Length: 447
Image (cartoon, rainbow, N blue to C red):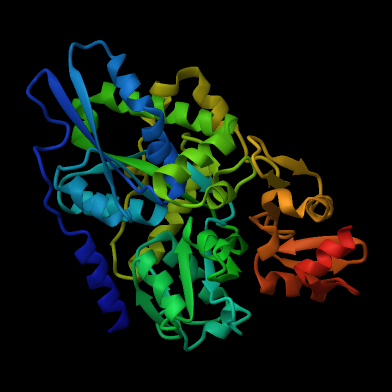
């Protein structure tokens, strides 16, 4: 019953929605409207949405086409990927961006309705899965995934966060269908449920876990990077639109690459732009999108990500949200290869930057990078009134987290941060003499 209810709820989200105006990609011959569906607060998609829009890169690329047409971009903001898929299959959205699991549902729905779509580029990714996190209330006594047995857990069925939850529960020996009471909720609803105590835990995607932790409304229970399975967000396009207006799609992908390069070159300024457009704290945006953030941005379609997408199909099939999906037919990197030309090979071969500790000083346009978490702590201890945010990578997974929200371990003279208590305990169990300490104690030891 629980699985059937979840499947029906997810299917309802995918039903075609009504939209104002004419069909996307249409015009009077000289004027063409291109409709882009994006998720402003799903900040892994900013290079195809929020940041791209604020930079005006797509409009500039369209103006440079020189084909005698006037282009208008209709930016439509959504909370999740499901309504974008519904609008695409209804012919109301041309280009959309969403997470890996919604991308698969996008592929399945398009094929089902005879209106195929294709994954044409990637926005942000994490090769270990660190973009999804399970959090609990700040005063919760739950200390590991095993403690979730019999508890109420909020997530968005069909999302990457739900996929992380399902996989993580299985590894912990808990049946994801019968071992917990899963609440299928939008992220904001789930956050409210966690605060009200009607949910014991919340499994969500970027940027909700970081936001709630930053606000002091939650603490991490499980770092998705413990799965060591890639998760990503990408750009999908209607096949008929791509075939009818390939130059427009290539212009979008060139603009996405420009936005990506801007984010990499100006991470603090990019975070500020996204924060202004979304209302999210810039410190939270930087946690994910910063120079050493949880997310790496690169439009190239890496084989490792495609392989992970194929593994995700089984999760959606088990939840009865899709049937078989031909991932190879869904992925189409021809357009991004053409758009980026000779530079594509370099992007495809690029790897994420090494994890590092960072401090964002008050009023600074750049962050400070430290070789070790202990060096960061020493700096924070000397400048506590002048720190906007401090970030440290998990000693096991490399996932960046707020220094004052991390679980700290003292191992001799070493000070090691962890996102979740379970990984910290695992380290302590394997290192004689190591022990969990408070953040205040860590600051004192570093000084």
